[in-house]
Length: 124
View 1: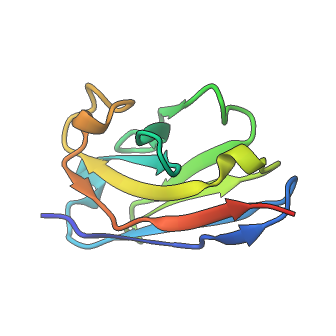
View 2 (view 1 turned 180 degrees about the vertical axis):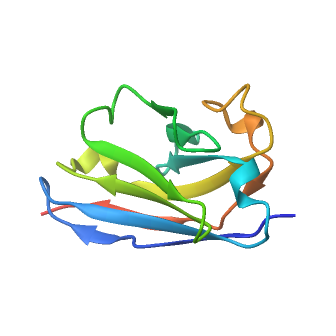
View 3 (view 1 turned 45 degrees about the horizontal axis):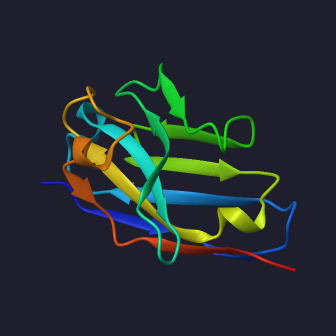
């Protein structure tokens, strides 16, 4: 069992930056692929970024590639999402997720545990 708690959301102007963090409970954090998803009002939850067990492999949605960076610290049981050059269309609730298998890390079905989410609003 893994419990995930996101933090770092808020209101930011277009072009600004935010850093989301996700703290995980348990001693097996390094055995999970970690991912970030987002869900805007009236839309389905969509993949944003994922990172492999050791951090050696990362994956990004085309819409955030070059602007967002995912990273993890296995010693601290945390995964982060650095978001730069934010756009209004990045507005959503952002969710952290953990996957035992790395076979479907770009889909919601590939994840076993989810956090409660943190709101990110990009607006002037």
